[in-house]
Each structure stands twice: as structure tokens, then as C-alpha cells.
Image (cartoon, rainbow, N blue to C red; front, side, top):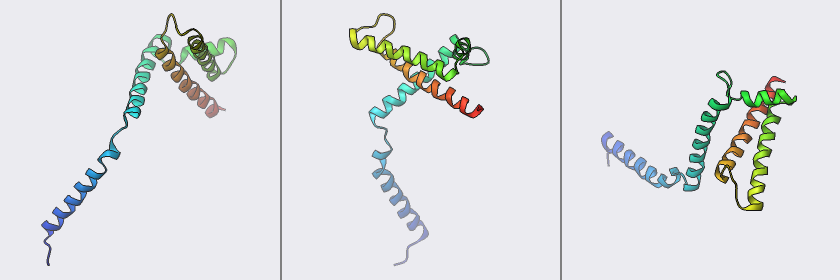
Length: 129
């Protein structure tokens, strides 16, 4: 049986469609992962807002660097101090079941953000060393 080029192309398209349909589930993002990605987007927007409030025109992390310089430590360590403040806040929540000025969600987002900032600043230190 002779197969024309058109028939072969159509069969190939059919096979590709079947494989794409079979892999459709694997291309979907699990709801938990999507929530994680959404929280990363929230943290990104928060960082942009806070950088405008706390940073300078030339350095979004000026507040952390200035604080580090003020007490004579590396900027990544200054971020760790702020990270520690957030952990202490969460310890208060665990002990009392309440927080007065900032919710648990905001505190956890700040904690995640300070972790990334500490990593970023630590990597800068390693590159400059």
C-alpha cells in the first residue's frame, strides 16, 4: 500500500495530537504549586512597594545596607537581624495566638522576603570578596 505525502503528514499530525492530549495533565500546574507561584508574585509586588518606601533612587536595599554600615556588620547579616525579628514575631503568635499590628500572613511573606534578601546580599559579598 502506497501512502501519499499528505496522508503521512495527516497521520503524523494525529500522532502529535494524541501525544499532546496524553501529556495534557502533566503540563498542568498543581493547585498547591500555583498558590506558591501566586505568593511569589505577591512577594515580588511587596518588594517593589517596600523598595520605594525604604530604598533609595539608586539602591532598593539602601535601608539594609545603611543599617549594616551603622552597626558595622555585613548587609546580609543585617537582613538576618530583620529575619530574626520576624521569627520572634511568629513565636509571639505561637505563644499568644494573636498579633496586634501585622498579620501572620504578612509576617510570613516578610520572612520569606528577608530570606531571599539575605541570600542576595550574601551572594554579593561572596562575589566581591
